[in-house]
Length: 257
Image 1 (cartoon, rainbow, N blue to C red):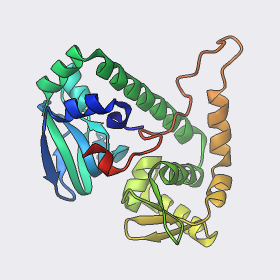
Image 2: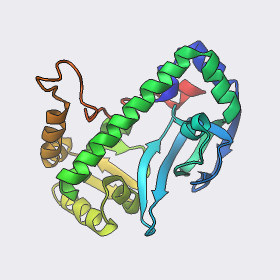
Image 3: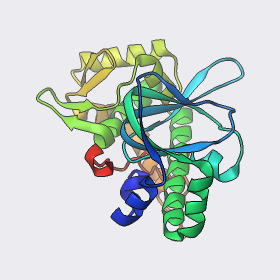
């Protein structure tokens, strides 16, 4: 569940009132990797991708952020340079809040700070799950799991099937699953031949979710095994418990206006 949706309505409106609404055009870099923090973004409409570049030039897609999400909060809190680049995927509307105003708000609103901590914990668990899947599974299995997650969290029912509301290219999908664009293209072709998906430019429709579940079954079984508490740990949950991505279920954009 995104950050703004976790807040009580009054707390959400109070936070949004700290900033200024701002429209952002498609394919715009709004936060640069390595720059100092000056502001935090609260997303009202649209989608952004969070990427980082390795020393050899490889760009990895770390996360997607959509309606209700907060972006740039880590650099605002710890005062260190930004650890990733954030780029719009289509037109986006945000509320821009100065970093010092955001931090001061957290210091005087402990309930909001605790909600943010819960969000960050969910993101850490999601990262653990992704590292596990990347080490243990083939590209086609990881891609099937990703498409299922996107359909469940960011899907929209259409006559064709479940359309993913996040506009991702093959290169961006490759960044999500830690593979080459060519490997992802081959995996998409296999899924198309099995009737699991329809693909257009930056658009994917899931037509047969059961085929994706079958392709991703080994990924799910390992994730479930990791989520199961060990006898020695009692009721404690593993930090790799496969919590769904940043949005366990997303609110409508109107919710944050």
